[in-house]
Length: 71
Image (tube, rainbow, N blue to C red; front, side, top):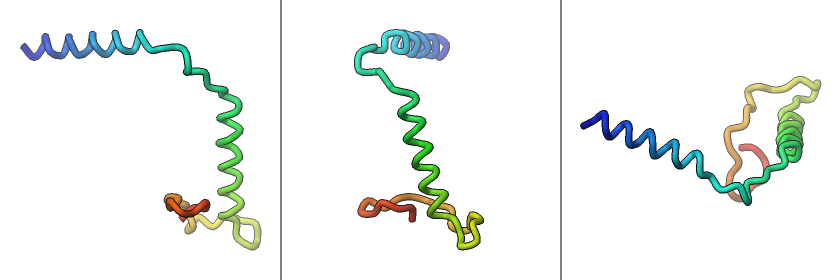
């Protein structure tokens, strides 16, 4: 019985994965990478100490809802 359930689940997953809609799924990879790079550079700028080194004790954890900077 368990084998049939696992087989059914696996077939259902494969069927779902093969039938994903294509419209609305266009992603500009370069735009996404540019955005991520900009966010990383902004974070590194915020973490830099006065002498230009990065203060790893200030590693960001999250961004609060009302703020725009790392907490």
